[in-house]
Image (cartoon, rainbow, N blue to C red; front, side, top):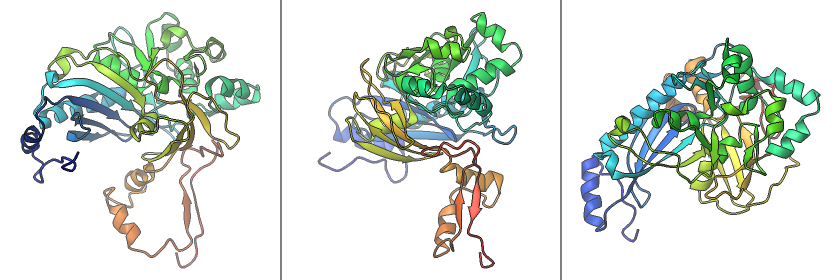
Length: 396
C-alpha cells in the first residue's frame, strides 16, 4: 500500500496487529485461511484481504522409513497436525470461523492415501512421493513399451515418483485391499483429497486438476481420468475422486472442527500453487522453489508441450475448466538433506545450525555431495541412483 506493508507488531501480538489494521482500513476486512500440508510439516496461515499474514502456526510431520528407499507418513498424523495448526492460527489471530471468507489447501503432491469410505480410517500409511518401492512395476511398464503412451496422455515419465504405481502397490500388498476396492469400499486420494474428506466429515471426495495431473492416471488433454491407464494399472475408477478446477467449490468444513462451516474455495498442489503465487499466469513465466525438494516450473499457457530435455509436462493450477500447462524440473531431495543431517546422520541437533556451519569455512575444499537418496529426477530420471560424496582428500 501507499503507507508501506502492514506487519505484525514487534512483540508478535495479534491483538496489536489487528488494532493497527483496524485503524488503517475503514472497510470490513476479509480473512482467508490457507492450509499448507507439506512433506516435512503442516502449516496454517491466516491472510487479510491485502495478502498480509495475520497469524500462522506450524507443526513438524514425523517421517517413517520402513526400509531403504521407502518413505511413509501416517495419514492420521497428517490430519492431526493440519487441523491443530488451523485451530492455533485462528486462535492466534483472535478470529472465528465466521470471520473467514474461504479456506484454501496446498499440499505435497503424489503422496498416496488409501482409506475406508465407511470408517474414514486409512488402510495403510501414506506412501510419500519420495518413496521408490514401486520401481519394479515402473521398470515393467517401460520394458513393455508403455512409456510413450503414458507420457503423451499424462505429460509424465514412468517413474515411482507418481501416485499410480504407489496405489497399485497398496492394492496388491495390503491384505484385503484389492477385494475391498473392487467392492467400492475404499477411496484413494492425494493429500488434498484426504484433507477435504476429513474437513467435510466424509461428505466430499474430490481433487483439483493440478493434483490429479500428478497421479499418472489423469489425461491432461481431456481433464479426466483415463480409462486405458486405469485398465493398464488395474485400478478401479470407483476409487478415484472427482476432479475440479483449482478454484471452485470443494465443499464446506464440518462445523464442529473450527467452530463453524468454512467454504473450501481453492486447492492446488504445492508447486503449481507456488507458480500461481509468484503470479506466473502466462506462457514463459517461471518460478523455482527450494523446499523438501527443489522444483522449477514454467507456465506454457494453453499449449501442451513435450520436453526434449527431460522435463515433465503437467497441469498448472486452473481457475476454469480450460486446461493450462506447465513444464517442470523436479529435484527430489533439497532441504530434506538438512533433515537427514539432523535425524539420520545426527551431525547437527537443529536445522538452523547449517547456516553457521556453511559460513565457518571458505569453501567445500573440492568436496561435492549429490543427495540422490531416492534416485535422480530431472533431467536424468535415474531411479537406481543413490547419494554420493566425491572429492575427498587427506585434507578434507
